[in-house]
Image 1 (tube, rainbow, N blue to C red):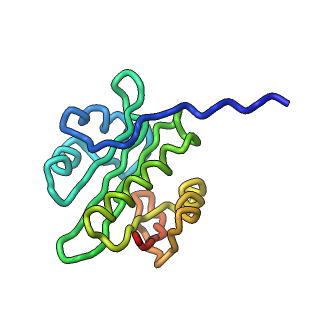
Image 2 (image 1 turned 90 degrees about the vertical axis):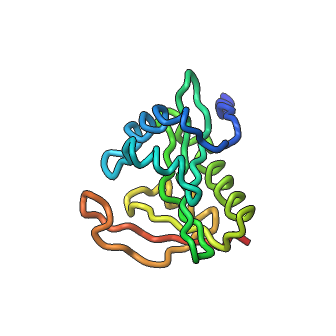
Length: 158
């Protein structure tokens, strides 16, 4: 029996900086067919204290993964607004590492829960979130640009 190849190692998630803007836009274009964030949105989020963008560096100035986390004044929750993994790097544990970093950030900043929305047809993401302890709280009809609903998920940070 031939041993399966070892996963490609990757660096730990780090906070994004304005220098990551072009790489964030490139990753966004690779990962999402619709509901993409544009240059102005990323620039604004990179400057906003209520937002945290985490990235995992890829090769040659690319990004292997990114996560956009948003907090809202007056709530105890942190929202995972976006999670992107480079198509060539999927299945290597990047999304799990990014979600663990999001949970760590939520704990460190005093948040009590993490929430997110996921497309019903994104089976891989739904399975990951389930393994990480997320539970569906509701369905948001007509959420995505294609008219699809979103499943709202949440988990306690404790």
